[in-house]
Each structure stands twice: as structure tokens, then as C-alpha cells.
Length: 248
Image 1 (cartoon, rainbow, N blue to C red):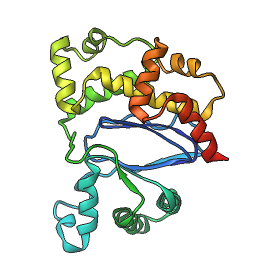
Image 2: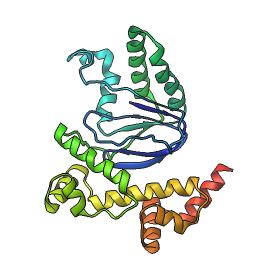
Image 3: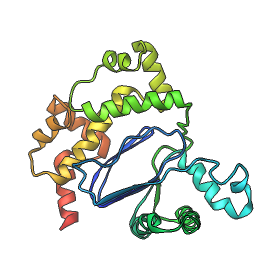
Image 4: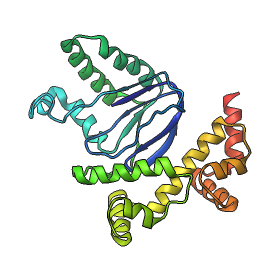
């Protein structure tokens, strides 16, 4: 579970990449690859991370009827879940307060938070229905290497040869491996990551659309415009204009 108090940035969970604003609250299932959500440019006040082992209360505790809601929440968390609105604000404050509580208070309040997350109407499943990216630890480590490399180098040209060598695989093997795990090609994943970054720049920086294009890792303005419209359903200029109207 990750709560980011304020700020804006990109969330990358499984094969899902998107932009968050005014903080974030997300729940990530076991062995679901993801990248860090906050850095020196995020502008957040504080980031709270809670890690739980699946059996942290014993092998059978979550099988009892009283834990039905939390058991269902953990099942959905295999796809990654984000929470917005009042849920993010109210439960985010309670999550931050856990650090100041006794061990028993922390445990009881943590179970209460998990139960309320399952009941929340402000939740969004981050990966497609039926999607599950739960993997063996070796695969998880490999995908984390790939994801972090994309996060650090998306503004550059990333070749399949380069990324395949990074994880000690041949190009054909890596191509099949990545598509089998994520249900999309590596090229599309990088492209989507760049488009999410472009939407972030359009929202936050008063720079030209051509500058947004190149700062997001695209080297062809026409390709950027076409890709952005396919990704958002709007042109970059329309996206920025509608966002400004919404914020007024």
C-alpha cells in the first residue's frame, strides 16, 4: 500500500501507466511489478509505504467469514487498485497516523483501513479485468529492471537490442517474454509511458506542444499528435484547452 500526500506524478503498476494529481493512494498485490511513484520532482509532502506478507496474520486468518471483504480486496489488488476522492483524503490521513500508534492499535486500524478500502466507491482497477501479472520472484526482479530502465531513459531511443541485453535475453526471447507477461509489446509500453508523461507536461508546464513532444521522448511531431489522439481521444491542444477550462 502506498499513500502519497500531495504532489503529482506517474504511476506504473503492472502494464498500466497513468498520471496522478493531488497525491495518490494505491494497493499493489504480491509480485506485481511497479516503479517508485514519488521523486524530487513529484512535489509531494510525504510518502507512506506499508508492506504486508500474504500470511502476516497466519495462513488461515483471512479465511474466516469476518475477513471476506479484505480477502476480496487482496484478490483485486493482484491487478493494482487506485483510490481517489474522500477515500484518498480520509484514509490517507489514517494511514499516516499508523506510525504514531502502538503495535495493537496499528494492527486493528490497519484491518479497519483495508476493510474500508474494499467498501469504497472511489476505487479504480488499474489493469484490465481478468489480468494477473503475479509472477515468480525471478520474473518480478527482471520486470522491475525493465520498468526502472524505461522510467530513467524514456526520453531517449530504447532499442529492443539494448533492453534485451540488459536482462540477458535474446531479442526474440525478450519480445515473447514481455508480451506474454503484459499482453502488449515493449514498443507500445514505452510509447504509452511517453504519452502519459506528455499529458503530465500539458497539465503542468506552459511550454509549446512541440516542446512537450520532444521532452516526452518523441522525435516526430506528426507521430506524436497521432499517438496522443489515439491514446486520449483528443488532440494535445484540445486536451490542454479542456484541462484549463476545467481548472478555472
